Length: 382
Ligand SMILES: Cc1cc2nc3c(=O)[nH]c(=O)nc-3n(C[C@H](O)[C@H](O)[C@H](O)COP(=O)(O)OP(=O)(O)OC[C@H]3O[C@@H](n4cnc5c(N)ncnc54)[C@H](O)[C@@H]3O)c2cc1C
Image (cartoon, rainbow, N blue to C red; front, side, top):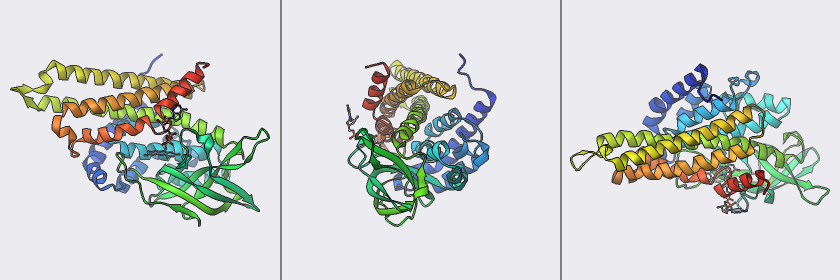
């Protein structure tokens, strides 16, 4: 077992690290304060090929794998999580369902622009009345001639309302199965379709430079051919997408946790108290050592889950463990990094304040910590 990165992976990590420090860091504070979407940064990420990382070259991808995406997410989140979640949601929730389940025609139509970063796609699963219990979906789609007619609403959908959002994949009830349970299917709804309304962006605690909206569908009609994959496979599809997505969110959380270590070391070496740098005090050194320990073990957890996934082995439990552990660690490290920064840690101009505000959602999005524990326990036969 060897978790050292090969030359290509190291080169990718270095180039995203440089990009995050040189391009993202100087501008992200202002976007965060003003709640604006960083179009220019996203455009440059597109040029670097980040949106196409885990996809085959056939549709404009970079021919890499899911682990490459995770490495990029970790390095971006080490500097900023809004940019990282924009990439995570665009790739693992936006383009991936079309790549995995789409017809040749759907792939041809949508993937080239999604993989170049020219366009973004949202993943519409969560609803105002149901999140963890996704089987409780209320949005309905009825086939009327050669069109689906969609009615319902979706909550908290990332990348769903930017100027470059091309579509949202929507999970909807399309019938009843012979055993009486709901038949769930996924349907592609292009932006601008009549009856599809995007509400103004939410006022959020964190991820302020990322794009999140509530969506409503009011007799929204799309062609029957917009069904993604087989009718009735919606449940299996989103479970697969979320299992993978948990590894990506774990990588993002590790990045935030490592960013807290970076900022804390720099600050502790510089800040003076009682005649010397606070980094000379063992109490501060131990905090930083514990933060590094947590970031490192969380990284190993997501490397392991990704390795299993890429080997075609079962990885559900390991992905849940990685997501649960990394998000806990991110929250812990953000709290400690803020503490090390004292009063300045509570000021928005310091990156650790952003890290603190951005960390909490990691214990909630793409399956809460309770849901991860349910998955782990179920996989252990309980
Ligand atoms: C900024 C942001 C971006 C998001 N982006 C997207 C997106 O792009 N697409 C998308 O579809 N969704 C998105 N989400 C939604 C997110 O995935 C959900 O918020 C999350 O899954 C939790 O669902 P919920 O908010 O409905 O909470 P609920 O499911 O209502 O849970 C409330 C609480 O109850 C607990 N709970 C629920 N059931 C159980 C149980 N059986 N046992 C023990 N505890 C339980 C939960 O763990 C939680 O603590 C986003 C959310 C946010 C905030």
